[in-house]
Length: 458
Image: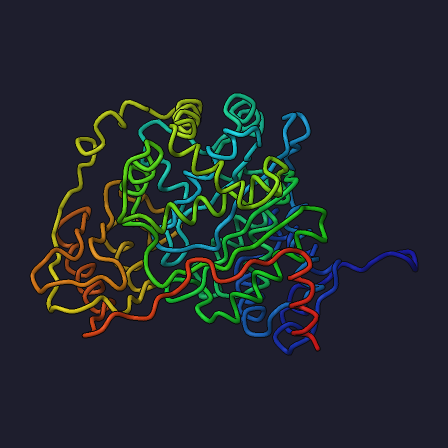
């Protein structure tokens, strides 16, 4: 061995150092990412390292190094041949969060390319791929060549990671879900941006959730994650903005798989959906920022106007349907969406008292959705496309005892019992309406993120 050679790290040493509060080098984090990707590091050691990292955290330097190592752990997609500015949106995860199905066709309508590499259900949150695959025939496991063809044809595609694209994240993502190590800002950042940077993005808009349904419920933790994501992505050369958004209740009316897709299609058709005003407002805000930083609008406000117009005139719907067809999906199911929806069991939960819907434990509601069969308990389990919950009353709504509060759709009658129990414990009433919470509480640009992190450091 030459004097200048770097010795191969030993995983047990890295686990112990992180357990004891030490920092890992760029080379050591790259070693972990490679070992996760090629299987050379045993899963039990990766799990131990994840727990040590969850307990001790990652520094800004470690987070950036792990993010780049995840990005470089496999093949990368080049968006240069698309001939368009490449931009994407990513949410940190929530209940009923389905904005991807709205913003992707909106920005494609105005000439941007949105190569969206998405994930499956994680913890109490739903997965974009599980929702999209409720459409019969639709494939999300495309090769990079197929991915590029759909993007060239439609301007957007929503797909899963290929076996060769960010393979380290596929292993660590699954382990985090099974080892109680999801809620770590550094790990979340590296997981999200590893995939996004591997997609060759020019720009990125992030939807960072806070509130009772977010992985990071504390607003300060969510602010830190938003700033961390923006600073890390910008340091890798991707123009990035993050919005801190409310997840103190499910987004929109539906939480599940098919019922969320159907909700979005109705919105893309321009239907008047007052009960889903928050879903529409957030989607328009996210798309507005995407159009602005993608240089298709002179300001975020102009971007919002363009986004709203694409929903109103049906042009975004035509792109969504074109994408579904290009990925093998049967668009005829949208001709009669109620007829296609065939849950195994249905139950209406009625309000058990009069008053105002005061608080919602949205994480518990997410687990209720999972228990209906819409989510999975073990990695690789199938999900029921028709299971889920439709909420008939929003936070702050005045209700009368006996009126419908939610409709549960489950795989079978047995699954309704636990789902209903979780739901009734998660919703609380009061005699007076609760204080309103802004849908978007803060926006982080590069300058905002750098200032925030510097102030936090000092």
